[in-house]
Image 1 (cartoon, rainbow, N blue to C red):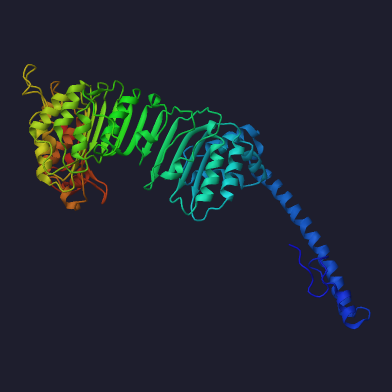
Image 2: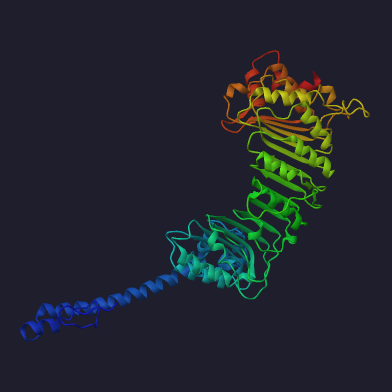
Length: 538
């Protein structure tokens, strides 16, 4: 901005005093010697500034030459190879740090900036966070980023905490994103529900959307709809939305994750997404009070689902859902009821009704009275092909719960008769087991799960080869000292190829190693504990 001189009103020669004019106005005479000298200095200052600008320009040129001389990689490689190296440095997932990689590469030198700005693959992942520090320049920055990506598919993440404070900025940013909706490959939206309806796309009607993640908050109702066109994503995550609020082609979904979803929405999901192979349902609620989907008269058959995870489920909605579906292709099931009580009857009924070949079963947050003998036997009969079992008891559970479960396994580790179901091994094809709970008071229950040493090679024994035990809450290190007789049995199992781990993460404890060190001075064990291979000979 040009300013006038306070004395003469002139706007010329900014930064230089108009000494002759000033001196003449005061004395009506020729300029005095100080004014003449100051005028000469002003001329020298102007020349010095011109010289400084020239020197700075030369310095930048020399720095570019230095970068070319000192950088033995990027400056000496063909641009297409340098461009590929840059691509390897970039995260492909929208995150807080993802946007900084491109900017960092562009800030090293002119050569790097030229390569980065002409490599569209670097600019296909866009992270946008609207906060109290944001202004309308965010929209300009977003448009520039999109322009650099050429016509490549885009992965976009849009995040905001509140709409009312930043609505204007939010509206401009969404308008920029809408213009390239035909290039959306992955879209993540985390923000107010009311602004979700602004994501309407452009008028081209085409979409290559593969992954859609919508996490909304607020009491307002939101809807995702791209005009008259329905995108066909394969992966969908929703939170705070019901199925009717997401207008897509559901029959293309293969991976689904939903949080805060009602039981009737779960039924409808299994009806309208026949290609779904992986499904995670969190915080499953009871049937909606308003406009619920109809309850099925017969169990819904879903032929392709292989992995089902359910967490934070109320006992009522747990039964409502599981009793109304049939999943013949189910391979892996995870349940975290959250209430500390697992209703096994509905779970067993699902497995039997589906006639599925379940391979992996994970049951978390078991209550104070989980899985008695009858429950485990019924689960075993319903899942005869189970290979991997992961159990976690509630932090409120004591050692008695752990010991009760271990005794069930130790009492049925072999099949004594092919014709007798009562004598059949518990989970006869189980290969690995993980248990997280209170440490047992009687350590010998751990090797008892495998039977006697001679039973390890018994072909009629369950093929359990890996067992991991860890506490559900931190315990004193001294609680991990195993008596020497039981320790010898455990080490013998290790020498026979069994992967046996008893450990705690924090404070870090390896029970086997600590017990070996504790008993190492005992002459009765002596070298056997230091070298477990000698246990074979003994």
